[in-house]
Image (tube, rainbow, N blue to C red; front, side, top):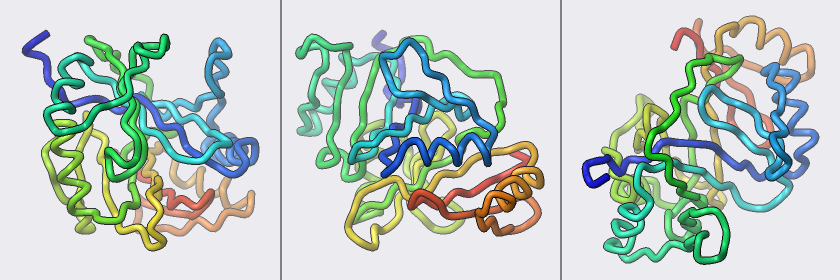
Length: 228
């Protein structure tokens, strides 16, 4: 596995919410997404194209990443002075856990999957980008680029960013000093239909051009994009 790249793929997002049942209604009614209850080993998950979204009544967001070689990733992190928590050492599924203090943003779980499974189903809503609120956006973006071998970039709005397998991770200044997921960009096919459904349920969705709309819910800025 020596030649496999270290840049991970975004596998899922565990989103901390005040009321997971109420949050689930948003995704079911506005985005027409149905939860997958799986085998009962985890909370219900919503599929956003390839990555999944898990709503949790617990503090702290967690990004789940999938890498090609967990041992190489551990060695790389150790060279950077980071000693991740190893799930295998605790008798759990092999997983490297990076806490928020290690990433400068939210917590990250890394699991190994040498041959990533590419999702071909488009679905009602597909994850395109995440905005993470952090205390020092420029520094944290460079830190993530180093942690995950992802080239640093800048999005059209000027925010520092990195890309993980085509999904943009943007870093914005945390106004209140809290590190959290502050924005979620979703690709959709029927933007007009979602605008009608959302408005009929009391959400204020504003257009930002012919192919974009946005609204605020759960303390998060949702941006809907079509034609991508």
